[in-house]
Image (cartoon, rainbow, N blue to C red):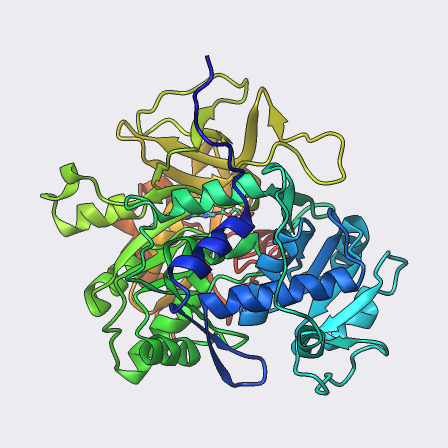
Length: 540
Ligand code: AMP
């Protein structure tokens, strides 16, 4: 027997319609590439998105067509999020930090018909679109008559397109499984792969993201996604903020510590989201300026492991609670969130920090398991580490334009991450499988080693890699970036580690560098580091 409930598809346009109808006055504030601040609202975003949908239709965009963006977090990018998906086309967000050959590949593979770009990226357009593609129109995200230097001939201005169109547009009643957006993985090995989200997956993911034990987004929040809208839909925040009626603050191109701190203060931001490298810059700025954050309630840290020292700083110095989250491009991205349970309330602070540094518990909709090399499920004892598999309605079932996927088996997606799960359901990642250090047949957790090292006074960043060893096959080399003005030595770091990790995990060597190689999604590029230290000879 079927239930007698209304059939209403879960559509991105329904999220925008809700925002316009029930909290049109809530502000959307955007710093632009031009350096101005544009104050808009969910009502205004909805009206301009309809104009934009008309403009795209006038340009010949059909349902299913891919419309690409090379853009920062701004109100115009937000309008593209809603207009492109809402009209039944596919928003293809491109990461401008990818190398040129990958940009070219992605444009071709996606078959984009329109490319919208911020002035910053004008010099990329001609080389990126050099190979034959179905691209028909280029749109610069600028005022009419303010086309950026270097934009190819025939480039259209976004504001001129909008000004020429009416505000009325009927969002089509799509099948909720219709593709809504496309984002390529950062492809550390081989070509990047396209993850094709649907309206249903995006709406469900954003809904789950807003729950209280998840990222807890509400109409009382002023949300600042420093995480870019050009990767994994800025973690779904644009949709979730529209859903709950959170004020949304979009930082534009300036993501340095001072600019972000200034924006937080000016807009009274309560909720921050970003990767650890961005927070490192913010915390360093705040320390140097001798200022505290006074409005921030929560800082979501994801995309790479949040070191306990960073969690402690936000909580101690700035009175914010850190929510450490794990996810991937293929998981929309939210999979797990680390929050304390009532059983942790009475624990000493150091113990609580240890819980928060785990990657967290799955939110409803995400199922996890860890398996051994043979694929046998492993116990949730907090000690046994295995390959992490996930499944759920916002986990990719395959890749765009590819018949087969070698990362999908038995209805599970193989994440490539290694970790353990404890009796309370907390996932602890120890490594990316490509980055493990295997010493004498036993794993050394690079994440744990790096977290411990980053707790040492004077250490700004640390990354551990395996280097060949005649007896143990591999031993850890720790590569460290000193904090500004610090003279921390290898002996200091070693002494700090001695009481924090087991003896056989201690790095055989510690090297200092000016900076670590950072990839297009803000993560340390271990592959590049291994290349840099190829042939390294360990002492003794
Ligand atoms: P991407 O698909 O580029 O977003 O990268 C996803 C990968 O980032 C995951 O498979 C993890 O290896 C890593 N990652 C994401 N969040 C975390 C986290 N909280 N701790 C450690 N690694 C993480």
